[in-house]
Image (cartoon, rainbow, N blue to C red; front, side, top):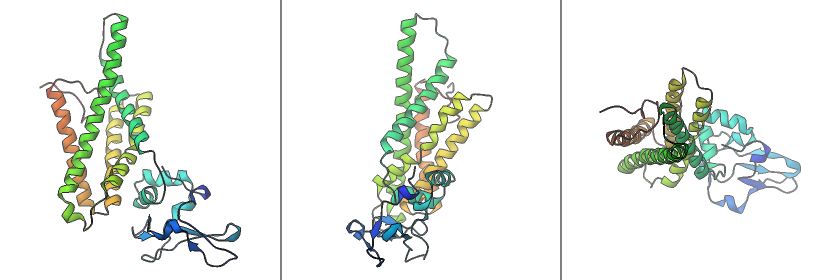
Length: 272
């Protein structure tokens, strides 16, 4: 999710000649970076002196390094992101150039659709000819992908609707909803764990699926809090609003007698 180490020392770079104090590059004239500790804007992350001598910029507000993760290995950054540390999220969202939001979203939806399709096929016993079975299974997968996409869209709409309604209370300036959408897509990477949960199936698989859902919601909560710089209460209410709208859509699907194809509690089909 993040790029660290020496390879990650590209953004925010300033140069110096003959050991003289470095000056920020022209790109850094606008405050495009953030301090991972206090969330204040910064013009640069580090300065590059001759002979590969680098000096991390110190934040003028909190007197701490603007971004200590630029010297960290990507694995360490990923571990910190998994632990939902706000500093790691700020590094990834503000101080790196990651453009995998769409691909990651598509792959997560495919994983979720496959899980639902796999459980649906496992519970169905068809006696129809082979061709009909093959076409029916293919259609079921497309249907599960569409349902998973609609549910995720409902989740995001619920979050954005709540934040839009609370906008006068959360900040004086208009929140960056585009950045928030990217943050939510990135923080949903926990859905990739759905595939290993299916491959190594055993008696505790339903519990694993619930824990994965909780982890994804926790990551989304931290992404909202870091991106909009709001308190935990509003972030939690935003997540609950999205979850409520998503659950409402699931309920509508169940009333239409659509099998959403998952044993996870919030998706489990019931008889009405």
